Length: 173
Image 1 (cartoon, helix red, strand yellow):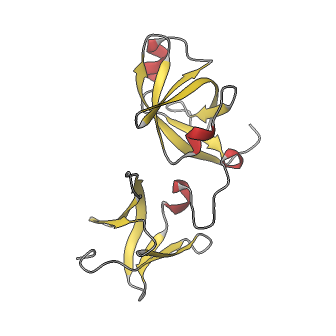
Image 2 (spheres, one colour):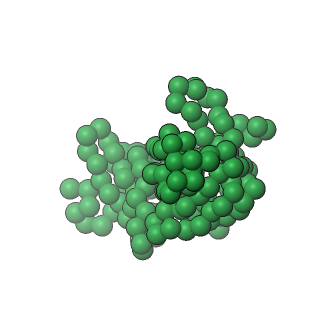
Image 3 (tube, one colour):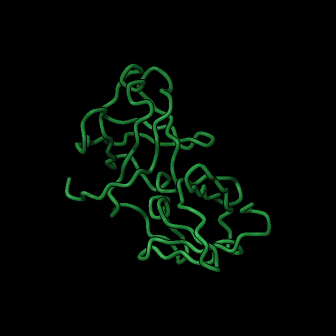
């Protein structure tokens, strides 16, 4: 593989049916751009940084997940063995974003501070909801859920690895 920068775009859930189909929970919207014939990657357990390639045969939305069949997976047992694995794409294959939009992998790990410079923690995860994402901010044992809306998220500085928020009253208490 030529692009060493792989980004997690989904996580395999359960097997679906007897012919090796998988339910995959997508992270972000990149999965919707994939088509049969596209290549994705995964890391076998204990393989270190070694990745394996999968060729997409079929893909369709299925509620909050995607039903996917890969050329290399033919039966339910092989599909079950994939449960919990992350699906990766080369960063260069991700669709371009509009100004002010970010991929999850770009935000996780950013240091978060308030407008007056007080540290809140770091982005530990992102919860996708129907209306807007929610950022999970952790500082040690403390966890704060911050809505990803313009009134709250005031600045995202990817180069500086920080996010500035203007939390509504009571959010940080």
